Length: 157
Length: 287
Image (cartoon, each protein chain N blue to C red):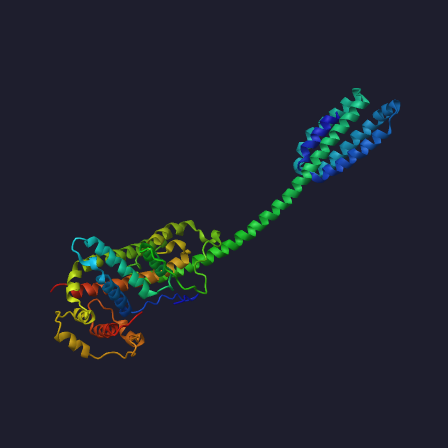
């Protein structure tokens, strides 16, 4: 999913992919022995949440998107795993060049908040940040739909 | 006398660099003239005669300076002119030692040399500074263009985001839009958290219902039918499946065309597609 210069490319894969990844991660979680003890609900919640995000990141762009990469890296760090991403031809992490051009104090204040929200936002230029936010929003909404369906399906009738 | 003259000239020195050099040369010439004449009576004569010449030269020089400055400086030179006249009258009346005059001349010339050198350096520094400022102006112009291009890019992407985020059309202005976007992202993240909490609560049911045949159970969930282990899943398995490779890789391109429908409650097409998905996962699909 390389982003072209003129048209903004924010294609998001279909729900199936999301569901698949999420369910697989859930089943992986389930295989853990200590998962379903009723006392540790909070841990479970956190794990499920993390599983949701990670599966979303994998489903959505894998390593092609900056935010997904940052998410996966963050998750791997928590598990103290070393994640290696395949090298891209284009240097995505070419930061801090032409520092003077980057600053525009009016926008940057608001961009700061976005950066805090979107994973991996700290190392992006503002225009790139916008693209990543758009893709992130699409993927998040997809994930929410998937989870909603799952919950609805599991809800006691 | 000469000191006062020189002081007057030094006041104007800082602004007129070229004239200082001329003055220097003239002073050096005068020094040479003075040094050649060593005999006292000659000096006296020289002093007597040359003084007027000196004064006349300084006066002419002042006139040069004055013309060079133009009308602005005429006022400044007016009083100096009078002062010079006063000086001239003073010199005619008082008797100075030749040595003193020579010493004074020498001292003044040294001062003038240093002052002229300083001014040379200042002029050089000024040209360098001018170059620097010119460069700065060019760089600033370039950055201005870059900033404009950046801003256009960012505004284009903001418009795209605006279409994406529901309810962003009413708010105008960049700040409001960004606020809306941020709120939307936060709400989505909160939703994920909330749903994961729900799932965590429901998870034991999931666990119980799930065995190794987990995939087929999910099919049941997604069709909102009660979970029956035996009969229902078989029905779903018999449902038409999408074409799949034998290795179990998913042929997503076939599934995609039906995804245009937004699914809040699972629609029929999506159920069948999810069935196919889960069948493949049971086949051992690995990503």
